[in-house]
Image 1 (cartoon, rainbow, N blue to C red):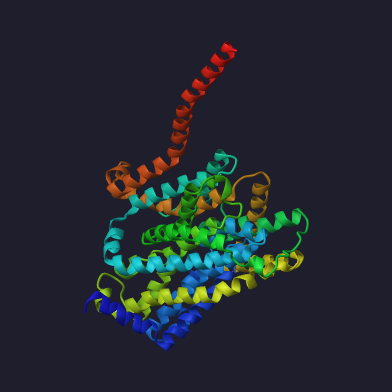
Image 2 (image 1 turned 90 degrees about the vertical axis):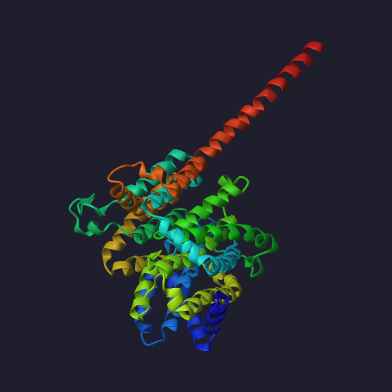
Length: 513
């Protein structure tokens, strides 16, 4: 059978009543899970996997995949409304989504996020269908040196979060990388920066640090400023307007492409995709460095489409190579094994109906998310009408429960509370939080890639320059980092002759007078 006939068979499988029902259940459950800080899609899929063991394989996988991308949007709701990212991938959306909520535009931010997520899901689905065999061979060429180069490219985007001081941003980025090294060294098995504390052997954990630095620190800051007045915007004010809708399309398109191609790289993930998308918006916008972070809809649409597209892209290496592209797809890989399905190069020929049925269910799930969440966005935003003295205890309870649920012990709660104090003083003294979190996210990726690359090359660092893909990425990273400075220098030089001419002309006029 040709590819289009297989796709049609997959579509017929995806739209059966039972599969549609369980896709709906997965999406709704995933949204609820995403709302709760600390749980995330990986935890949700792991918790509900045992409930699917009696189902048909394709139905079970459709439901688990629905939980995956449903939780992405659920995490966005909490990130926008209360400045508490339910998952690390929604952190970047918070940078502009939460300021929009503070301005009374929470409904617009959530609507834009839903539309951008749908665009990201649709674009990535088309790319997934058309180019999966090609992309799988490309992903095979993407080894540890290329991962290191990609991490360096992302780290250099720290300039986009610099605010008033690039030095502070770089310092925070390096601090994030250092914090990420706490725990047992993967190569030597030697404890690092643990100070004899057994609890630190496993590291600090990204989610408790995130909860403390972002959510709890924001609560402390708000309490320090006194009680805020609740939002008094009307129902119509919470809905997205035509201008905001117009400004959603282009960032969503760019984010979709960035997210998909980052998502297909094993280990990269949706968080990295959303950071790179945000940096792309900063560079594409006029005065983007000043405007992003103040409540711009572009800062919501780009990262949202990127993290949803990356979630779909992560299925490429899993389905075609048997290599998970993220923590959640690693659990889904286990689900495939439980149902007796072996992902890999032969999967498309051995189980075409299951593969295409699963892939096409992604689009159906995104349609369900759009239909459910567009009309509900103003309703979610109405939460901000309550007095904040009632909202803050709920936020604290959610955050601490989320931190505790990660390992079911108080250690994670103490980490969150400790970093809440750190985050509070960082905000007070104008140290940007985003570079620190970027360093935390990229630290393990950078370290593992560096160790493996040097092991492959027997300690020769020139491996990063002798491989075409890694060299290209490094050149691009260098160009993006020094490019703005060079352009400013060229413009200054170009203006200087005209300035001299103007001075000479004024001098001549004065002499003639």
